[in-house]
Each structure stands twice: as structure tokens, then as C-alpha cells.
Length: 299
Image (tube, rainbow, N blue to C red; front, side, top):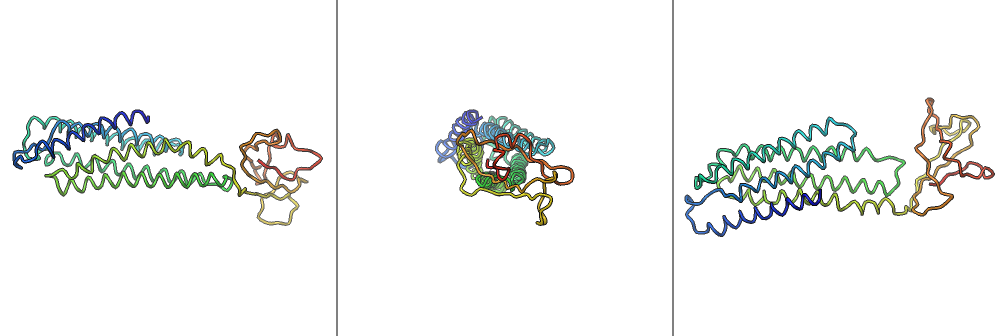
């Protein structure tokens, strides 16, 4: 996916640079009414921008599908992405058909301005939906049983999601505002050129940060979390208890280790009986020393 985005980014840069060179250098000194308001380079720039946008938004929509485990919100995002894709391609097609008619003094912008506006607004709405959904489902990953560094990783993911979604959506809105207020110049195109770059960077940041995220999780933690459960005869109130009578007091301290050791083992997810009691699976105590008693378990 990173290779595809870079491939499209190269052609987008070539087309946008050619359009900027044509309107600022080649047409310099041409009377205003005789200047073409369109070119083939300008017309194909939305093709590459639309493909990059669809690729990046589709990637983050797939992440929502994985995090949520549901298809409804993902289908809604894919629907908006499809409308954004159709709008961008239609905008490029109309621009290509308009090139032979130049100079016509911004007839394309006056006639099909609504299409450009709708496509960019849909993209901005989709960016906001993706950002809110990602933050919502990432926040659900917080748990009292997480390692401290896992919480740090979730905080970083939420922060990056807000930043990337906010930047791309606000850039789309800025392009729409500049286009609607200044249709007869190319200020909007200067902002539009950066839009595809921002989408590409958000994708590459998400992909390239994965090794650093793995290191955060694997790094040893100096602040282990401790959880206690009392036996049925305990006088403490509000503590969940084992459902088997006579079970001694249990303290489970959760820490993190990256060194293999024969005495270290992993406790599976703890489950509860219907009455609220806690049940420790049998395989969790295979390597315990019976003479020492079942007092604490370190993972």
C-alpha cells in the first residue's frame, strides 16, 4: 500500500508542478481575457488526488472495521468514499472535455463549481467520521488490565488520529472556501495541491510508526499493576470472590517481561461464574510449587 501511494504521489506531483508552471510562467504577460483557465495537467491532477484519497480513506475505514467488529459504520464510510471517488473522477472528466474550448474565462469553474464543492465536502465529512470512529473504538481498548505502556500506545494512536483527521478535513474545507470566494483565480488550486500530500503523509505515518509501537509494548514496565480478589470468608466488601469454598486469598500482579524463562508462563483471560465469582483456569497453575501455596502469580 505504501508503494501504491508513493507511485500515485509521483504522478500527482508531476501533474501539479506542470500546471503551476504553465499558469505562472508560460502564460505570464498574456492578457487576462485571453488566458486559458484550464489545461490538461490541471485536468488530470484530480485523478491522482482522488485515487490517493480513496486509498487512504479506504485503509482507515478498514481499520474501523477491524476495531469495531461491525460492518454498518464501515459500510457507511465506504459509501461516502465511493461518492467522493465518483465526484473527483467526474470533476476530472469535465475538466478534460473543457480544455479544447479554452480560453472561455472560467466557464468550467462557474458551471461545475457545485461538483468540486460537493466532492471536497464529502471528503471532509468522511475524514471527520473516520477520526471520531477511530477515537471511539481506540478508547474502548482502555482497560484496568492493560500494561501501562499499552495505555501509552493507545494515547499516542488517539492523538495521531485526531491530528491527521483534523488536518485533512480542515484543508478540504479551506479549499472549498477559497474556491467559492475566488473562482476566477487559482488560489484554491494552491491549497488543493497539498491535499493529496497530507493524505499520503497520514498513511505513511500510520504504516511507518508500527515498529515504534511494537517497541513501546515490548519495553519492560517499572509500574506493574496489582489486582486482588478475596476468598468468600473475607470481611472486605466490594471485592469479587472465588466461587469455590476454601480458596485462599489471591493476589495477581501483572507485569511485563521479554526474557524467556522456564518458570514464567502466561495466564489466559480470567473468567467468572454466573454468581460473579472469579475462576482461574487450571492451566494457569501447572508450574506452581504446591509446597509454596497459591499466593501470587507473576506474568
